[in-house]
Length: 106
Image (spheres, helix red, strand yellow):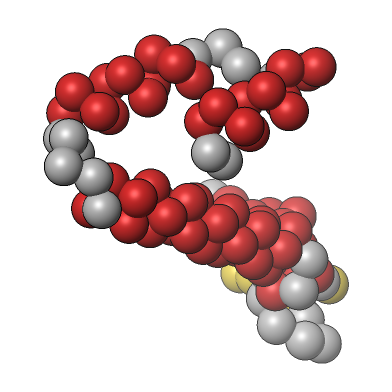
């Protein structure tokens, strides 16, 4: 049986340790901090989580604004939603952004 010492429990280290153990090696994994490394614990993954949370909060604010606007109208419903979608289709990019913001009430 092989004995393997792996230094560093980042994405490469812990995957190597798991695979070596699956192949029957006696594995020791040494990590000074937390297994997963910078990417999992402080870098990529937490950053993406913050970004997605902020994006969802922004979308929720827009939805609340639209719902409040619709509640104050007597013609609120599927027809209003459908006409708004048709009016806004294709505008949110490039030089048309200002027009879209005005027409679609972003």
